[in-house]
Length: 402
Ligand code: HEM
Image 1: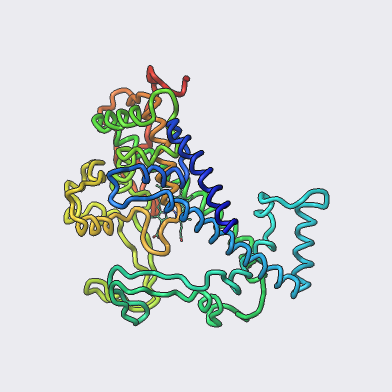
Image 2 (image 1 turned 60 degrees about the vertical axis):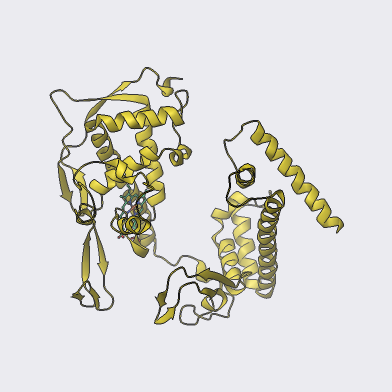
């Protein structure tokens, strides 16, 4: 009782501090508690959130996190002591990387692969949350089992992580299974893939977007209005502003719909299957033409016209229609092999375009009435036949000069 009272007191104190911060209009860098407090103060909210609700959410988060971490630490220490070879290897790694003159720190983790592998192997064998629950909104088939709609489905993560079909010696504590066994060459290739796939596509998208913006002065004006209003004229746009700039987001989306840098992606059928009446035999390479899908007049109104507003949520649009469109918007591929950089790409490209629009006027080179948007496919990539050439002219209220 005494402990819970003191804990309540502590949470109350933290709540009051956050309330003060909100009252002083420090909305920047809002954390979870601030967001809950804003909801608590909203008198029109459909579901009323009380102070007690806020305290219990924070307590849940704190205890769930702490408890699971404590349990994992106990299991790990048990396994390490039962496996002296693991202890020896760990100690060797720490002595070598951290040295003997200072204590290990959080930032050392990334340089300690053995230690990371020990933690992973511990949670594989002894997951503190062995089951988790999902709720099916719609009926679906999972490996031949029909799961009706509105069913609670318990996933047995414990069993999955001890499945002998996937894990060699599943009951044995073997941290080395998590140590990358990729050859150096493979590793190098993957790193290059990440760097080049990401950079090249983002650069191309930025070029296409600037071309479209300059060819559509009304879009430029609308974008600038949005940025000047949300970000202001005294500071430069930042990554974190993106979420408050729906027009800018829509411009990026519409650019990648019309000019997807990866217009085709390839899949390989492991088994024979039927796709809309076509039989695809096993072991067939299938090229998906995302470019054509995103210009399909059956789905997109005026598919060849640059119209960012089509991505501005319309309340009247039926949910079904919206979902159907989402399936037809595939500039990042689809499924398990889809682009892992999607979210990052929106932020990088959005910020780059935002800075250029906010800080500069843009002039076409002499004699050019419109930016030439002619496309060329090079390999599997879509590029501008005439790479973008435009001249920046500083705006009078350029936040870069503040
Ligand atoms: C506008 C920017 C980008 C576009 C349009 C784009 C598009 C794509 C597409 C179409 C694929 C093939 C997906 C599939 O086969 O289903 C792909 C794959 C990939 N992308 Fe991106 N991407 C962009 C930015 C990035 C960024 C910023 C990163 C990382 C930092 C990145 C990393 C990757 C990687 C690693 C793959 C290969 C995934 C795999 O094979 O499993 N991309 N991207």
